[in-house]
Image (cartoon, rainbow, N blue to C red; front, side, top):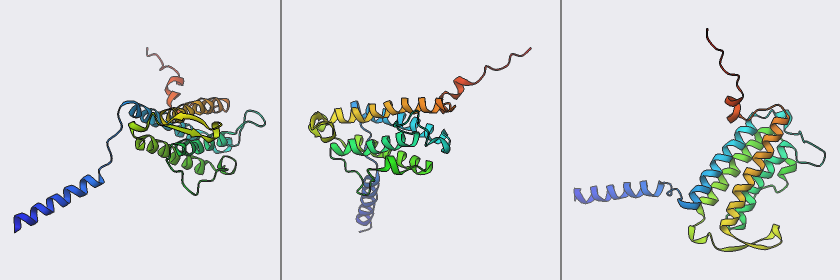
Length: 190
């Protein structure tokens, strides 16, 4: 009797451990895509955190997105693109957030959550679905593969990281990852 109870207890504990274990990280193309989204997403967040709050309303010219609007545009796309392949955006997502969310802390919070959403979409898209074709309403109902949607998600992040770097440098802000490159050489001894 004691052995039977012990076996059941061990199986129960093992079952709990397996149920709580995260799914394995994707490999192949999805693994590469996920890794790149993590890399560029971190750079975008790091740059947003370094940018002074009073510069979030700065824009290079009238009619062009401000710093904060670019970051919120990124956040909205990180929900909109995955929704095309069936990854649901939050029901309370404010589609006008690009124009209405201006507080630096709220913008950064939205960015972080949206990057997690983008990564979750890559993780949850099975390899078998990557060649599946879907209609993209905001691209004139063109049919694209789910892989291509995820590629657009990834390249969209890169596009706006570049824009954000230009905005930052125009405002005297050096991207955090290149600060070491900007430091003066150490003084020579002797």
